Every structure is written in structure tokens, then in C-alpha cells.
Image (cartoon, rainbow, N blue to C red; front, side, top):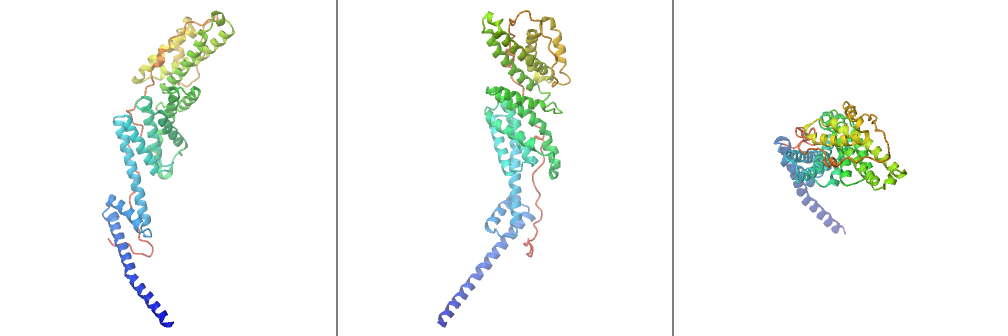
Amino acid sequence: MKKFSLLIALSLLASTAALLPISAQAQDAKAEFERGWYDTCYTKKDNEKCYQLSKELIEKYPDSQYKGNAEKIIKNTDLNKAWQAFQAALETYYKGPDAPKLEALFGAGDNFMKVEPDKTNPFHLFAASQMGLAGQGAAMSQTYKDLDRVKNYAEQAISLISAAPATVEKFKTEYTSYVDPLRDLVKANLNQYLAYRLIETKGDQNEALAYLAKSIEVRGKNGEGWKDPNNYWMRANIFTKQYEEVRKQYDALADDQKTGDAGKALLTQVNEVVDKMLPDCARVIVTSTKPEYKPLAEAATTLFDGFWLFRAGEENKAKGKEFIDAFRADPTVAAPAIPAKAVTDMTAPAAPVTTGTNVKVTTGTGAMAPGGKSAGATTETKTKAAPAAKGKRKPRR
């Protein structure tokens, strides 16, 4: 029995002795790999090779003292690559906007925000904002037809920029450069787009009016929102359509009905809608100060002149200019009273021509939003010297 136990002990001892060289070899291989990794990343600073070796280090030696450093290198590299790809797609898009380039921009932006999911990060906010604004410009100029996809990006950008803090201390400079110039633009232009989509798709027009009101609430220092003639032109178009619907009902009545209760009620509705339309036509006229807005100003003037005579009459024609001038200093002010003409009977005069409302809003896809073209900031974090793990020597270089 004792002899048998001795044989077992000798066998175990032999097995242990056989394992020792293998374990030592593994340790030597690990140390050698770490030295090569360190030399590549911190001495030679070969970033691409360092990135690949860092992945290999974590896979082969998950217990390495340098695992944390390798993980940071991988994260920063992925972040920098995604950011550079987004910046390149943004610049390429604005050099010659078209649908395929916009799709590429959306893809690069989605990827960047996935790599950098922090919604308070200025670069995340910048990417979301630029995607929404590029989509808005392309959709409203009819360069891009997927209105619902742009809607999703618009809603995302509005939500993020509205919830964004005034600043984040560690990103104070980046907030000033990348986020602040976009706050008013996002809220004004993207709420305007959400209204535009509803108008184009014949959606809820009251909801469209609510979006336009949100856009106009923005008092951007460059005129975003409150001095944008597109807002007032779209609202005038909604009121014009309402006028056409009610007027059609009125004109369908028999002559005796027009002078009766039904005609009186519809004519009251007609006048109420016109009284909302005229101020917005005036607002378009006073805010269309740039050359590209000339078609809007001309269309609004035609519409205003026709409906002013319809509502105020020839005797008050000269007062139309005074009415328009009331909006020059601030187009958001309440409208003055319209000097309605005296009514001798309840039969409405001939309906003014409304074909001027076919003029489309004016928007461009060739102008990059603030912070775009000149964006020079980087998410790159400079790699610091890898510290030696406690109780262990730093790999030799």
C-alpha cells in the first residue's frame, strides 16, 4: 500500500515539473507581448498598429496590467475615427448637396452618436443638430423625398438641444463653439420643417400652426424664427386654404341662402380667416429683405392687395401700407385693427385670386450650419505614458 502511494506521489511530482516550463513560457510570451505593445503605443506612437495590438492584448491577456490603458486607446480611436468620418461626410454633403450624400451623412452621424452615446457631449449634440438641419434644407428644397426620415432627425435634434444644459464644465469651450450657435437654429428651423411636412402631406393643419408658433417664438439674433418669412408664408398658406374651403361652401349656396342665416355664418367665417391671413402676408413682406426672398415678397404682396380690397374696400386702400408698416420693427406684434368696409348687404364680393400661394418656401441646402465647415475641434484624447502596475515593473522598451 505504501509502495502504491509513493508511485502516485512520484507521478504527481513529475507532472508538476513538466508544467513549470510551460507556465514560465506563457509568462515570458505575455511579458514580451506587453513590451512590444508598450513600445508601439508609447515610444513609436504608431497609432494604427497600437489600436490593433490593444485589441489583441485584451483578447490574449485579459489579466494584463495594461488592460485599462488598452481599453482607453480602443475607445478613443473608435471615437476619433467616427468623428472624422462624420466631419468628412458633412463637408462632402455641403460641397454639392444631393440625396446620396445626405444618406451618407445620416449614416456617419448615426454611427458617431452610437460610439459617443452621451447626450450632453457637445459633439453628440452637434452631430444630431447638423443631421436635422441638413435634412430640413434638403427636404424643403425638394432635394430629398423621405420626409418622415427627416422628421425623425428633426424631432431628435429638437429634443436633444432643448434638454442640453447651458454648458458642461469640462466641455465649456466646445459648448461655446459647437452647441450654442445651433440652439436657436435647431428650434426655429426644425419646428418649421415639422410644420412644412404636415402641410405637404395634408396632415393636421392645426398641428402645423402649433409648430410654426414654436418656430416664431425663437428670437434668434440673426432672425431665426421671428424674422423668417417662410414661417409667415406657410401660415398665410394655411389660412388661404381655409378661406378657399369656406368660400367654396358660401358660393355653393343659392342666392336666397346667402342672405339668410347660413350665408351670414359662412361669411363671418370667411372674414375671420381673412383677418388672420392679412397680417401674415404683411409679415412676409416686411421680413423678405434678402434677394432670395423676392418671390415670397411678390406673392405675398399680390395676395395682400387682393384681400385688403376684399376686406377693407377701395375707400381704405391707402391704409394698407400703414397696416404693413406696423410689423416692420417687430413682425410678431399683434395686428392692428383692419378697417373693414361698410356692409350694405350680406352677399360677399368676388373672391380674390389665390394662385400666388403656389410659390414655394425659400430655403437653401448649400449653406452649412454654424460650426460645420470650420469645425476644427477633435474628440481625440492624447495618450499619456502608461503607468506601471503596482508591484510590477514597467515593460522594457
